[in-house]
Image 1 (cartoon, rainbow, N blue to C red):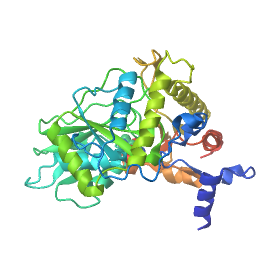
Image 2: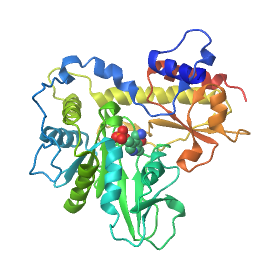
Image 3: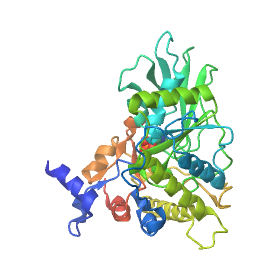
Image 4: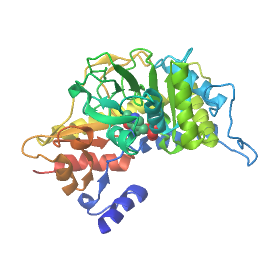
Length: 385
Ligand code: PMP
């Protein structure tokens, strides 16, 4: 109990000033609090006020395939993709979800044949996002089942392959890996934004998932969106959400729309008020954090980090390597269980086995508030084997 209390005290109310090595640094979740300061200075511009008579109906736009999707959110989403150049939206259907987590499940529902001979296989190349196996199997569905690492999938059966690019946990750009022709792809592009990766071209896949959680850092609003080519698939995804939660909170959609609009406006170089471009701000923050963590890791022989090729971003014109939202840290040498090793030093991370990978790896969030990140970069070089 005392350990748990200490963790909670650390994450919610900051950090004690004495006995710093005893302070628990919780980098297990990818809670995107690092953009808080940016949003604080936005003040009124992104404040949303709603009255009790507004947004009462279940419905938003009955003419739209996704009838609970707020029109203001549609234009904010398409406007932002246009400004950033990271996804094609023309002629596509947009489905809103309670986070992209709900849309993942909606996509599985829509893509698994209802009268198939058995549950549809769902695979993703290891290391894969740790929630996929859980979200796929937690209801023990007859429609789909987690079938593990896509590199090892060789059954002559239909499958859904999840392509996460840039990848969670390791940050690499990805393509699908299964060789067969019986696959359907879902592209999870939660991190295909210019603070994490050079944008190379507008993504144009059949089903693409995005979320405000990682793009702007508003995980608490629980808003994600899917860009879907096929109308029938978009309809089935909408049906899933209809059965699951009868739509998505209007207040959250309206807040997300306001925030996405503000980001688009900040990207507009011609804007009169010379506001800070959100992606410029977040890119510089990520670049600075990666510089600091690489310096910290270079001071010790105990850990290593992946390195990434340089590419030029069509959005910013900058040439850089990935700046992932997570550090995929490897324990070098004798240590076999990096998660337990770091926990003994009061650093909480998520071990490789959750991602279908070796326990020599852990995933540590790079998106925490500054005080936790600073402690992390001070703690790492101080750790002795
Ligand atoms: N996909 C990936 C790859 C993620 O990392 C996350 C968040 N950790 C999600 C989906 C879920 O995001 P949301 O908060 O929108 O449900």
